[in-house]
Length: 87
Image (cartoon, rainbow, N blue to C red):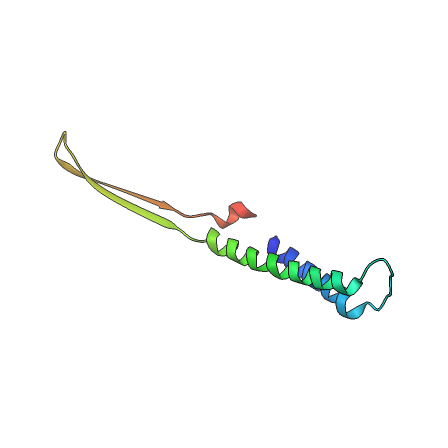
């Protein structure tokens, strides 16, 4: 969702900065457009970083000897984030 919001903010800012030629004396629409474009770029980059972090998986393997029965015990746990949970 943040990637789409970043693209939308960037597009709205570009429209305000480059396509709208309206003079309003109490606000500068060009500056608002540039601010929205910057915010959209930042949100887009943060969305990409968060998406990359979500797909990372961790795998842990532990080996130990059980002192009661002198057997080697191996535990494996894999942690992956389900992409369907984010929908």
